[in-house]
Structure formats: C-alpha cells, structure tokens
Length: 62
Image (cartoon, rainbow, N blue to C red; front, side, top):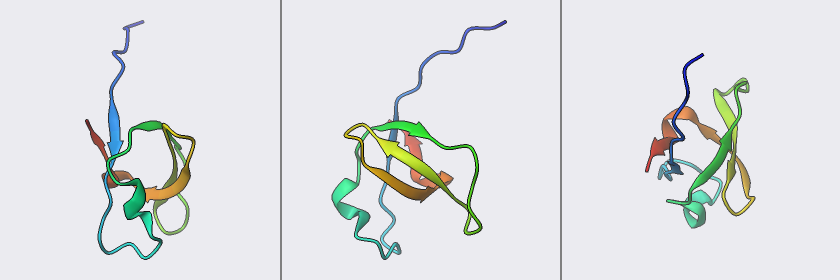
C-alpha cells in the first residue's frame, strides 16, 4: 500500500453563486464529500466547521 501525503485545500468563492458564500472565501477545507447532488455539488466542511454545498472545482490546493 502506498502512503498518501496530506494535501492542504482551500475553498474559493465563485461570484455567480447566490448563497452569500463570499464571507467564507479562502477558508481552509477540512473535508469534501464524495457523492454529488443532482446539481453537481458536494458537501464541503471548512476548517471552522461551516458546512456548505460547492462544486468540486471550487476546492483548490492551497
């Protein structure tokens, strides 16, 4: 079994979102769900415990 290096992830805000997510822009990500909803979004848990639905391309290294 190969070892997996931890990766630091951040959540980026997309201006076209209509859910006032900009206050969470740039926060570190604790976890990302595997299953997407019918809109193509997954559950993302930020480092401060905030849960939100986001597109996978909104979670980036950093």
